[in-house]
Length: 220
Length: 193
Image (tube, rainbow over all chains, first blue to last red):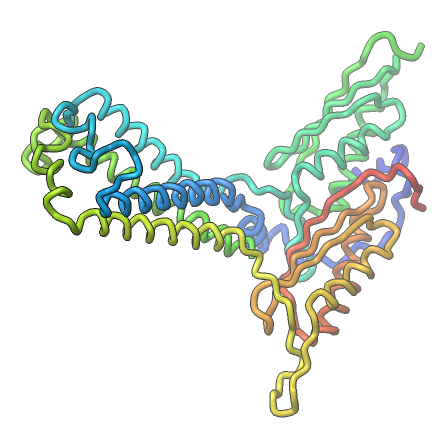
């Protein structure tokens, strides 16, 4: 990260990198505590599958309740006489029928998926940043960081477009230029992105990889 | 708050997944004749004649099914509510000693002052804040959208060393567990120096 500072002079960042005050850090990189805390905080909550499943259960419970109540009053709402509520199930369907096995496998698979969703921690929704205060957890949502770094890279003079992908420990930038001689351009993009990441101070080290492509038919 | 709702969601998913897996597993075990001695023969019908006739002969079956379905619906409704609750704090007590009367502060007044202060910073576009948990030891959820050209180190230092200590002072709390979500927006309309 240190060489990013020395390179920052020839990049297109509007604010020159000088002796700006950096908030005190607790050397959080070496401490597992803040990292674990941040991971736990930004882990996917599984709220959407949870709420969906709850809604399905509510609907099923209400339908079952109404149906059973109507059957109890000897006026079933649906066209299934309660005397043979099993309808097609009775005596013609067996435990080892293909249909029975298929349905059971499907249900077992759904149950397995639900357990996996509940147990697997999942990728954090935000990239955690170091904080000087242990009661403060900071994170940048992945999507926001991706766009932010993309704008920065695209603002470098000579860069046409830039796309950013954020992995667990890496940031990949794919930039295109129309310049004929893109010498030094890749390095300045790398410098801008590394400088920004250094200012953000993520909780775990992030490597920056830049790929530069030259687009034909540009400025001559 | 997020951790609490995450636990509620994940626990419910695990319980229901386990029920489905065990039930379907039992059906599969019998269908594939894994253990004929325990489960019964695999080529027997799913429901015997006697089982089909059972609800007709016993009048208690349908009311019990209805009650069971109702309980399931209620539990699922409670689960749904528990997952979508924000547990926001509305009023904060400022006077610990009740004998001298009570003083409360509206939570949105405290968070409003915080977001106003943050928004007055030219490098911050927007901010939102929510106090949640218990009224005596609340947690803070803070969202800040900063200008992309601004220095994130300075933005963060301003929040850490000025805005949050001021809130702690206003609420007379030693510490407020805070989750800050920092986002960036592009500055189209103004330049920062």
